[in-house]
Length: 290
Ligand code: NDP
Image 1 (cartoon, rainbow, N blue to C red):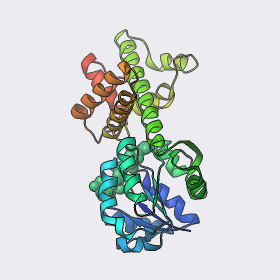
Image 2: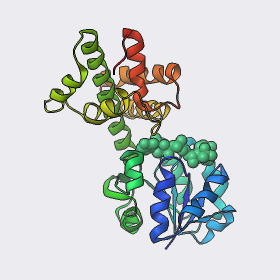
Image 3: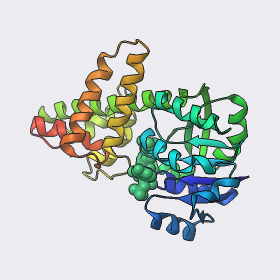
């Protein structure tokens, strides 16, 4: 089976690295130097020209949003092999992805939305979780290629469902992170020792990935390592709010969370790590968590 991977960013670069260890893999990146670097580091080959996609069986994309996926789609559409599969690992928009799936179907290409979770560490370790939407028989065809970088692949429903589940997952992350930050800012204002507070919270019912990992490793250390951009999490919160509203679900908490992440993105900076959202709370409170 021949594969191609488009988008060698923080996630795509290591994912395509794992893929190329087991399958023939062509790589393409907007900044071409990264593709050359990838080919030098792994067993991949640079896709010099999109016509090279004509005999590719599975194409992966991992781009910031569905808008960039559509931009790439428009450049490659006429080079795709009929009967091939397009596995989109972008945390994308479920509604816009239906249009992508329709366009591809007209060219006999099956689209699967397959966003991932587990962060850059999960991508480097080949231990990502994949939430995938699309026809069951097509998903079975790509299970083996996905297993090169995924520890778990769950079929969550028809096309668009993967993106919907991913958006809700990231909204839960956004809420947990913001609420943990708000709680610790309050404790800091009261003069409570934060290490001691986290020691007990993390064996109590209020614990979360935010209190156990993100706050101790990224906020209290003041490192805020930029592995997952604040702008991308704000984008995911927006998708979660949109899909929930479209479904007619009540969204009081989603709505306020989405607006707070948008504010943080615009004031703290879209390219900062997502955990830097806590800096906005610190600024309002006049304290620093450390
Ligand atoms: P990055 O910003 O690190 O990488 C983005 C990639 O998209 C780069 O390869 C970039 O190319 C390319 N790109 C950007 N704009 C265009 C364009 N107009 N046309 C073609 N290529 C373009 O993002 P991540 O790897 O962090 O994220 C990718 C996706 O994965 C996002 O949807 C994100 O939400 C999701 N995700 C991210 C996680 C993380 O921890 N980082 C975890 C789970 C999901 P170039 O090199 O030229 O800039």
